[in-house]
Image: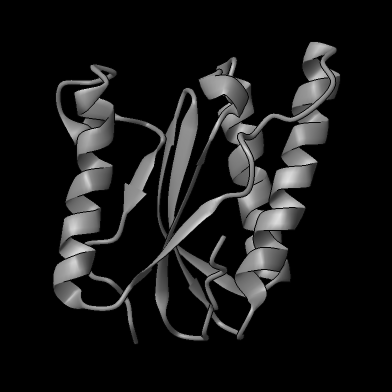
Length: 147
């Protein structure tokens, strides 16, 4: 498996899904806890969250590391903490996520536009809402914020 390098100031599309394609969010509180952990670890490891889309069995982020190599630390801290929370809350054991997260570099403005449209379309495609702006667990900046 090819490992991607994460460089300061670049934007990356990060995503993962539930183990065996199962849910990773069981109730509204789970989404809130997840976002709380995202805030905590993004501050700790200096990662700017440009966009997120949380769906019942997977998530997407657009992340901008403010230091080289900070995304793996962010993802590890957030992922482990959320797994502990879900397993305790639901009296489960084992993995919540299906393997390691996936990552793709978003090198240009046109790629950002494509990613933004993809994130916005996800809850509509899954019929969770009819208009993307009605989906509570989606936040996307209009600009890619490369600055």
